[in-house]
Image (tube, rainbow over all chains, first blue to last red; front, side, top):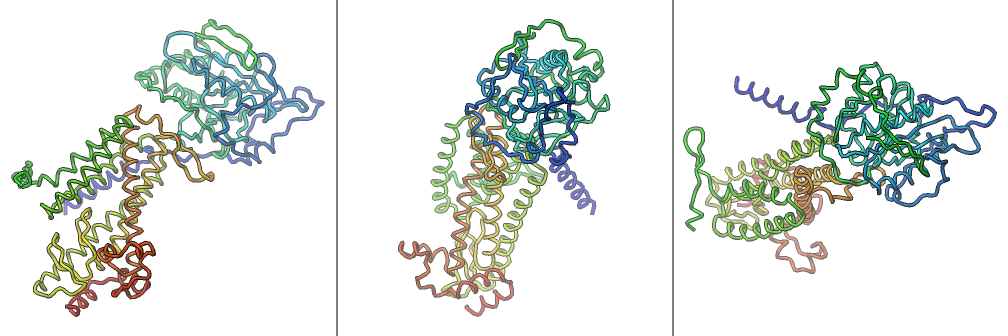
Length: 306
Length: 304
């Protein structure tokens, strides 16, 4: 009797441990494609007399792009110096700064720029690409680079920031590169994760956030060197400020990752994560040095930081 | 022969327990194979082909010298446990597999385990009935098995890997075990490969791996990858056996009769050959599907 009881209890514990939801990829709540337009934070058109650009067709009639074709050379209109582009013939309702932290991945950058200019021009939005290059010998500090990029973009009066990794390629044309009312995790359906979401609080890869919200949470922490956990800290900052991030339908959130070696996660990332917990006000956008050089190039604005 | 008689003892609750050397061999061979194979592509090719050769040689030796060996059954059991553990504790923590996918796989594995359990149980029950009929003459379809040392009505063959005689009494369960094993192995290898490799979608629904070039760079990835390759290879073999079983049952012939058929009639799937025991397609299937112990026992007595 007792033996059976112990056996059943043991079995239940094992089953719960094996099938515990957090051990698996997660289903998540998302905004449906037909509600995307009402969630986007539209800009007032700059020239009220001209016709506004329309985005409805783009979002509702979205199609997937063949992943094998992402390496192909694509024709696009030459952007203005510094990688800025405004659609011709209509007034854009979206103005986005695409901020890409970068170090030493020339082949990825080439593919990324070629693909993204074509992709974004197709969306008929006003955008500018910022490549933030870490120019020192320390481990890569993704969050700090994003802070520098955001700082420059905010000074240039961009109200919407998209924080984007250089190895991520959006493969659905309906994935609109504008900000939603709440910060948005854009890369929720990534091919290397089997198009699943590993955990609910994941907030890395590609993220869209309003400049006002980014300033409110004091940006990201500058203290995460090496791979990992800086996005988890960013998520905590948003929650601590009462900002609930959102996601769009997986249908439009499909991304592919350009092939590269998986980086070793930084060993101290969790220690740093607990250390910076109480320092949101002191560490971030407000604690950046002015030690940057801005160089407008043909396809992007190059920000060299250290 | 002295080495075969050599028995190992392991400390056990209530005195040392005797363990046959041949039965514990797979417990060391399979983990060693998977660990070595996860080093690099060349190690994978080398270890897997070595194991195939090793199995071919040792199975001939065992069948000749120790017919009652548990080697093959322990191999099946060890494979099942190790593959399941790798899946649950190496592949699942990559956080790329959904809960319902894990549950679906568990259901398939449960189906396989239950089929094998019932198959062996039925075989034991029937052979204990047959035990009392020891003196009976061998009818043309009552065969004795020199591995189980029993006589069984409508015996087909002895499956070494399940350590069990297969006949009309458990053929249905044998086929379902093959079905569940094939599905579970191919499904788990697909889940694993799409997790550790770069996947692509076929017709926007089916996820398949396309680029596995980075798997040997990390131990966990390599181990998952080779376990998936092993699963896939076993699944391919089991699928062939499953299809063969379907044909044999539909034709109403035993594995032995099939072997004796000339190549030409094998190519025609044996449809035109003389099959004295076949009762027609539907009746053949009905016989194995609706097997009940009592009915068969009566038949057994009648035939005797």
